[in-house]
Image (cartoon, rainbow, N blue to C red; front, side, top):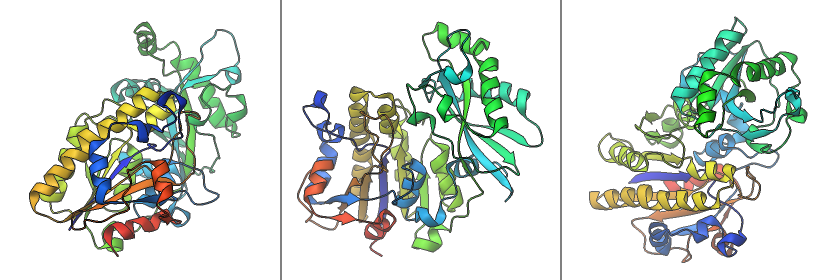
Length: 401
């Protein structure tokens, strides 16, 4: 038996008037999901434990079978694992986003508005230039900067203190003054980063090309060195991860899973969907893995951007360019297999950020011809009566433990 999780990050949503009162998932043309749901199980799972903030970190840990209340130590430390950052037990890791702030002349930093948490999904190559400029200005024995992927980077604070700082995607369109860190040094570095980056030649070129400037650092997601148990020891399965983002790669590194690198995988709408599917098929059918986790960030990014059209498109791409080729390859292989399709959390267009509501899942088993008999979407999932209170136990249903 082979096992695959296809995770559409932030795919769940709310009914939208523009879509005739349907969610993007219900509205999208998804013939492959429809086919799988004919005989698959559709239900709801709560991936965010009560009292924990809804994020891809806690939610994806849960989908992989790790109880977030036990294993979660902060988002950035997981990303640091992927980047290969050495961490001491006394270190604090923080995410360092390269964000877009309003650039009106002469106003205080705290009066600026956050326009874009990703600076138009800045390329890793452009971001690396800006992170290097920040590193030259601020790095010392206490603060170390590391380049990640796209807008997602890392700051290691030696002997630091965990800070609860609001994620930038939670305050899009708001003035930043009420959300700046309490620690004076972190706040100072963020403020000075604007002075350094706003007029940087690379940002001048981006602005001239009609792109958002990546004109400030934003620190958040602080935590200590993580300690995940081995995925293989926990499940008895050899697993692999396909993702463009450091968070998921870091979880995989911490869990001892194989991390697959796909050329052109960006975490955006134009990511290499076919490459991800091909890598997953190879991992399962050629490289001896029992389990593969395919993470696609695009629906979440489109939710943060507030783009109804592109969120629908991202879900359709997931269906036709990831799930379909994966299904066809597994079906042709002669192997028995199960595919679990789900989001980690909702990212409603209305809010442009995450919520902790239960998410719909679709579990298909090639050896069974009976299921819940409904299409796969949020409203249909509510009608089945199938509900997984502790999301981290859903993997046991997938693996039939």
